[in-house]
Amino acid sequence: MTEYKSVDSTRITISELMLPSHSNFGGKIHGGYILSLMDQIAFACASKYSGAYCVTASVDTVDFLKPIEIGELVSMKASVNYVGKTSMVVGIRVEAENIQTGKKKHCNSSYFTMVAKTEDGTSVKVPGLIINDKTEVKRFLKALKRIETKRKRKEEFEREDFSHLEYLDDLKNYNVRIELPDNYSDV
Figure 1 (cartoon, rainbow, N blue to C red):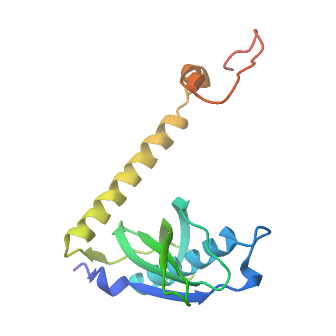
Figure 2 (figure 1 turned 90 degrees about the vertical axis):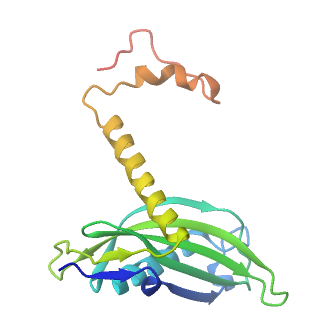
């Protein structure tokens, strides 16, 4: 019998005060530091859900929407949005709060695909997901769409007969100048 767990049981929130040591040369919090925190919460969320050690398989759509300032309190909220056989998509929302004014801003959202593993590194089956509201259904469906889009893109780019020549006309509206030699062919 397949075990199922609710999305609510996967929710994790972490908060951390941003220090000068987390900043980049521009005085804002370094994006790499935020990604590291996101990877940690994705791991915690997926491991809590699956009951297994989890590894990051991919990260989709990391959009840095607003800069994070030194002294702001960063909160990350994560939940499992989708499950496959051994994988899970963890959705993460990053918000920063000015602790003096209480003003909050949405700074980042991302999707981490995590895979459950045994101690010897073999992928292990994860529980099924119980989705019980409209938002959870939308998140699951959007994860399916991202997975399908990624699969189609991979198939297209990895075709044996893939040729950049098919796509040269697509570049006409971009800020690029193509200067290929006359004898250039798609070998």
